[in-house]
Length: 173
Image 1 (cartoon, rainbow, N blue to C red):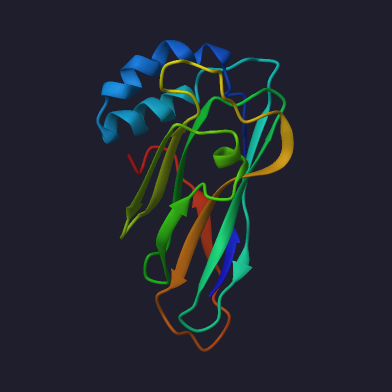
Image 2 (image 1 turned 120 degrees about the vertical axis):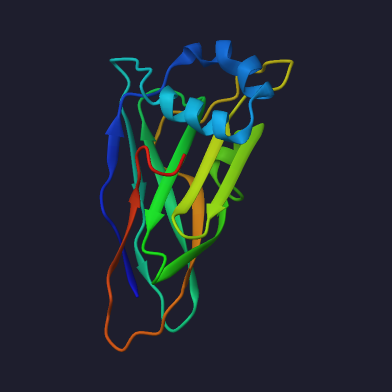
């Protein structure tokens, strides 16, 4: 199938006040962490702009591909939560990782990936969660690779079959 991102997301969701949430995040179960991360998207610095995009690609046969998730930001990023959905009849996620990304290079301390076989995948990241708090952030930048979603084709098709890979709000938590 040919994989296409449905949309890019632009939202002012980065806020340097995230440190006050660190202790809560340390004690929170995964579901609470994801809900917290989604709520962080609502905390905004009106002068900061963030944009997330999912790459697109094609896969032949029952192969796999890596789809890049990129961030453009005008303020340092202290954390993020990604929820990505797709048609599980055509593709399946096998990994959601920060290896080889600016997220890893900047020293993310809490990385929580979850593959939801029939729905999609989520990835929660907090850059600085462990004492001493060193203020790790993803720096300001354009089209920075923050994560990689590996997907596999689930079905053999005889013609190009585009399938959306998209950010999901309120469905994968």
